[in-house]
Image (cartoon, rainbow, N blue to C red; front, side, top):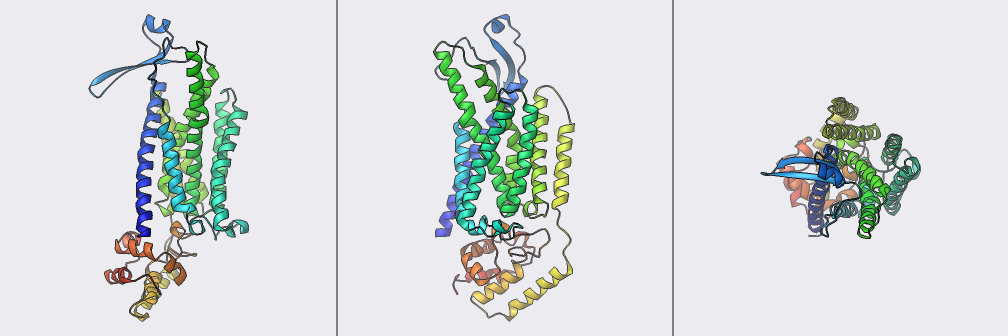
Amino acid sequence: MYTYALEAGNLLLRWLHVIAAIAWIGESIYFVMLDNSLRAPRGQQARQSGVHGEMWAVHGGGFYHNQKYLTDPAELPDDLHWSFWKAYTTWLSGFALFALMYLYRPEFYLVNTASPWAWAASLSGLQASVLAVAFLVLGYIVYSQLCRRISPTVQRDGLLSAAVGVMMVVVAYLTVHIFPGRAAFLITGALMATCMSANVFFWIIPGQRRMVAALKAGQKPDPLDGLRGKQRSVHNTYFTLPVVLLMLSNHYSFTFTSSWSWVVMSLFIFAGALIRQYFVLRHMGKNQPVYPLTGVFLLLLALWLAAPAPESVSASSSRQGAVASIQAAPAGGLSRVQAIVKARCVQCHSATPVQAGFTAPPAGMALDTQDQILLHAAQIKQVVASAYMPLGNITKMTDEERAVIAGWSGLQ
């Protein structure tokens, strides 16, 4: 029941996270589209009243006339619409999911015993948890300092974009070498998502509140508040597609088990940003297919680097020997289950996987020993009984073997 409660909480948190993310990303993409689709006002009255740009649109059986003022609208209503709770809810629910799935059992999901760096391989679960959270905090601080120092008055965004790109490559390299691959991809995506939410919390909304307060006081708002808010909002739109792709990657082990995983991750990030750039320019009336074509090329390159090698003869022979051992095991109990796990599961779920395309156990779950099997007993029974595992039944687990595991008490 305890395992079920954790799974149920995972489901509800994930649902909330996805709903909030859809709402936030959808609204963000809409406003970027709106901002880039504005045209100079046609009417004399609109120009005289300070309208910076306008757009006519048709949708949902009606017509819309959007107008944008920079810092001095003629009037400011009390029912002004604000956009921030979707961003906060997305980050809070995402961090709660991260805590439930990774921080709760860091010794299995965050400690990378196969790390080439001895100090990382010897981290305790608590140390790995602290380091994972530190990546989110320190990563945002570095990003924010780059914005402050390179483009304090929003004049050198090209150079700033290049610096942020280099920063993400460094983050990809570090996370892959410190954490297990699945966690590394998630932490990198979470860092980008943290920068996005922090941009809203520390820059966009406070700047907008200062502008509104100045207008209500009869003063002229500081235009730099608007420029900085626009800068961070643009950054958020380029982070969006890479974040979504990195969050999805944990369902596809070939992305994070490759020996080139940090390069694969970097290519995913740049591909997402380039594809997003195409749509940003398209809203401005510029059709430049070189951006999506380059993005697709980077994705194909990433998939090529992540492609598994053909299964070796020794791996195939090892699997056949393990299958034969099932019959030699006693009819019931842990030893029988271990024989099935050895034949059908440890090709992937091992400290040293032999399944092509895997360099670390998926989800950090190794099942090499009886103690490890006992530790994950409830999860093993659940995913095997539901036929979710082995994925695609690649190791040909039989119905009889599933029944043995389903009927296992989970005890010695």
